[in-house]
Length: 357
Image 1 (cartoon, one colour):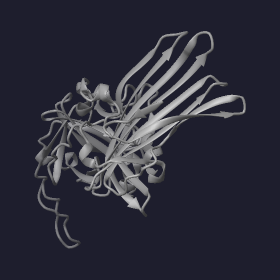
Image 2 (cartoon, one colour; image 1 turned 30 degrees about the horizontal axis):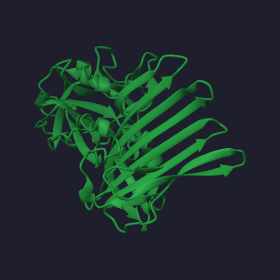
Image 3 (tube, helix red, strand yellow; image 1 turned 180 degrees about the vertical axis):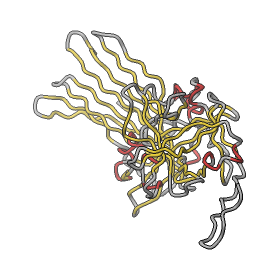
């Protein structure tokens, strides 16, 4: 049986062979390959085994444009069948990723995925179905697509064929997907204050720390311009990712720890012992717009959103429900504004009297 993918004119076909006692069906790519980059590339993998009663099917569409931007759309389905009852369990998974790429030689594509959304549906004949809505994934979820060999793909056609965000692979979701990829917010340059919409106070680095290099954070009502500890520097580190460093303590950066309180709250501190935040996956953050003037801040390592509490620590990431809850949780809403920090205090020289208080 022939099956065409997306808007392309070149067709993939299915071929069945006998392997032992089983009939195995797989996809076979078109014989003609269109050369060159940029373009849209397809990959299909089908493993239909009559003896094991399994049917595993995956399809991938890859867009590489001439601005070094890329998009990958994946559709996966795995069925377990019974000779008398038909399909007893079916898992479907859809992924859409956007980012940038660089070529390594003429065949290997090295992708830096800035955004990744996924939807999962599981049919179970003997139990309740599971229908998970689209969710934004943490960086490690895209690792399997970080390096792609074009030898595993077939070029479908030129970039001009792009008509939908799903590259023709997921037409049933094309109306939903654009809202999951909001444009990056316009962030001010230089020192900023980061204000919790829930607390109506700005985040600041405390004098206190745990004695192991982790500085505690809190919220203050003081005028931000007069509060050096409440100013921060936000710097782009990679597509869609930022570092957040203390303007008060220039060598300290905001990071999500590996520790939590056992109730879904992960501790957030600044790291006092130096290092390069761009090289620390736990020190990278994503900043996205929820609505005009309101942002969410997410740990890139786990996809968890930063939220404010009235507890002593003050600042955590929420470990449950992914980033989707940040859209409706006011504790995860933030504003970022430029500020003019006070000048650093002048320390008296060895033979000088301290300034009058």
